[in-house]
Amino acid sequence: MKKVGIAGYGSTKFSKNKIPIEELLVESTKQVFQTTSNLSQNLIDGVIVSTNDNSKYLGAIVSERSGIKPKISHTIEHLCSSGTNAVISAFSYIASGLADVILVTGGDVIGNPGQVLEWDQSRGELNHPIYWGSIFTKAYKRKFNTTEEELAIVSAKNHKQAIDNPNSYSHEPYTISQIMNSKIITDDLRILDCSYPCSGSASVLLASENIIKKFTDTPIWISGIGQKTNSASFTKNDLLNLSSTISASNDAYAMSNTNSNDIDVAEVHDAFSVCELMAVKDLGLTEKSSSTEFIRNLFNTGDRKINPRGGLIGAGHPLGATGISQIIEITQQLQNNAEKRQIPNVKKGLVHNMSAAATSSTVLILES
Amino acid sequence: MNKFETELKNGNFIVSECIDCKQIIWPTSDFCNICHNTTKWRNTNNLGIIIEFSKKNDEFFGLIEVEQNLRVMGKIVTDKIPEINQKVILKECSFNKTPKFIFKTITN
Image (cartoon, chains in turn brown, blue):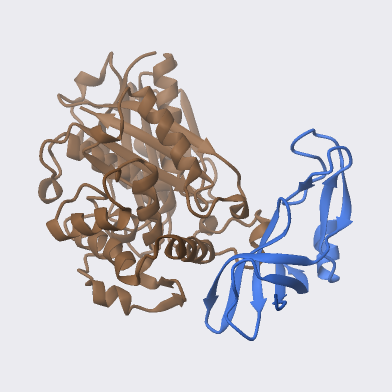
C-alpha cells in the first residue's frame, strides 16, 4: 500500500450567504491551484466531491470549470461526515495504485436539506438535530451532574478560537455569560450551544509518496483511518457514549501504531457543546481528568489543543466542507503554518467527524 | 403512502416483525435485517417508558421505549415533570410527511 499525504489545500470563507454550490466548490479548488507548487490540471487523476446538495454531476462540473479531465470523478454523500468519507475514498484510490493525485472538494449551501434525515421514522416529527442534541445533553447532564456553565465553556472556547480563523462564519468573542443567556432552544440547549449550518467549501489535494514532493516540501501523511457506522436511526444510540467514535478511533490508532497520548492537536465534531465533551472522552484524550475539567483547563490557559480553528460551533458547519476543513486545520498545525492558531511542537494530530447523532464516525490520524 | 404511514394516519401504530425470528424491525421494513426472512405487520401495545426527555417551549418531548428494539421520539403530555422510566401510553399518532407520536404519562 502506497503512503498517501496532503499536498495542498484551499478554503472559502464560511458565511450565511446563499452561494451556488458550483461556485463554492470551484472557488476552493482554485485556491488549491494558486497555492500548490507545480500543480497543473493534467497531473490530477481524480476529482471527488463531498456534498449533501441535490445538484447532479458535480465531479464533472468542478472538473470542467477547473480545466481538469480526470480519470475518476464522482460525488460522496454521508451527511455531516461526507468530507472525511470523500478523503478516505481518495486515499484508497491512491494507496491501491489506481491514482497518484486526487483533488477532494467539498461544500454545502446554507439551507440545504442535508441537515434533516427524513428516512428516520423513529425520530417522528422531531427530526431536526436540536432534538437529538437536547436528548444527548440532558442524558449527559443527568449522568455527570454537568452544569450549564460547563457546557457554555465549550462554546466560549470555540468561539474565542474561531476569532483567529479567517474563514470562520463568526468572529464574535462570546462570553460564558452571553452563551448561558443566549436564546433558549430547548430546556437543555441554547442557540450558542449549537453549530451553525452555513455556506462554505474546502478542498484538499492528496498525492502518493511517488509524487508528493513535487508539490510540497512538508507533506502531511494520513497514517491512521477508522470508520464505524452503527445505524442510520438516532433512537438506536447509546445516549452516554459515542460508540461509533470509540470503534473508529481504536482502528485509527491501531493503523497508525499510535495512541491517544501521542495526539498533540485534535479537531472534534462539536455539533453541539455536549458532543465535544463526549468526543474528548471517547477519543481517549481526557484520561487524567473529566471532560469538563479538561475543557475548562484548556479555556483558562488558552491552550488550543481541541478545535483550534473554532470547531463547528465557532467556524460554522457547511456539512460537505466540514471534514475537509478539519483536515486542513490539522495539516496547517503540523506544518507549523497555522499563524495565530499555532500550537507549539505538533507532531501528530487527529480529526473526528460524525454523522446523524453519532450513528457513524470517522477518525483520521495525521502526522508530519 | 405505505402501510405503516397509512395506518399511522388512521391512529394505529403498527410495526414490522420477522415471521421467523420474531424480532421487531424498526424503522419498518419488508424483511428482517437479522435472518432476511419476510416480516408481517402487527400492532404495538401502545405502552412505553421514558428513556430521556427535554422540553421545548411548553411541551415535553422525549425518547420512548415502546418495546424491545422499538424506540421513538415523541411529545409527552403530562401534568408534572416526567421521570426517567415513567410509564407512558400512546395518546395520539398520525402521519403528515413525518410520523407523529404523542404519549401521555401514567402515574407509577
